[in-house]
Length: 392
Image (cartoon, rainbow, N blue to C red; front, side, top):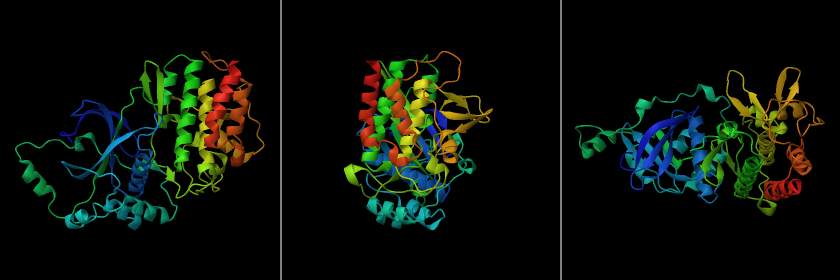
């Protein structure tokens, strides 16, 4: 690790791994390094999905987080670069067999150049059963971070670590670093600014159009999964965290995927009605999630999740003293009429309410019928058009 990157400090910790701030040794460029411990087949599957989706984006869009590289940890102090276009065979087999597989060194070498697309196809053929509860996964302590050993030669170190069966202990994803935190942190720590909000929704619509054009359905769009780079020209947002994403095997008309999914996943306040109802759904569920985010960003709608004191951006329906996620409320009542802009009084400071064109767009994005929502390849143009119309 220390030959390629240095780890400076921990900047985030979630159910599946730890994110560190680091630097590239040769260039000094600041990077984010995410450690994903390979402790169960379920979490390994999510890691491979995230890796494959990030590789597919190939750093080609400014509003999608860029992957610089991937390292494979095979011992307490051994990190090996993972070659582009390959997936570790022991991880693929762990997912398919349902238990963490150990692979002898000779077998590992023989499979190191295998085509990753075959591995992904095998993963997509298995039953559509995904992990629903992330809270039971264990994240290793910081002291497990590989460090340079003392008083041992590199040759003896490698010989000791490669003796006997090997398996991948963790994947390390090296990504671009975003100094503005996530979208919640960035926007809610600043006074409301309409132009900043407009820029954010335009960038997000462009990012999702790009992903859907590649056949990638994110399935967990929310402010926590949007990172921000703070620049002199304004915020540059980056869609991140592709652990729940799915890639279509083929694209339909106009380059859009019509692949259907069945597993219920995502975050409650941003899930579409069809996902709440346990129905099969398409990439149009992402458009609903994006609609919830847009509404919350433009009107600065926030809520406190149970057990937390941190405000989060998200639209909802009030039922007495209860806050219901939009998707849940619309699944119970498909004819529910949403009040956009919000009518009830909220504490200042608040941005001006969105204009008629933007309100109409939000209602379309939040339609109970997925086919009534604008597809991603048309959404970007509609966002630009609505913002321009309301500014006249």
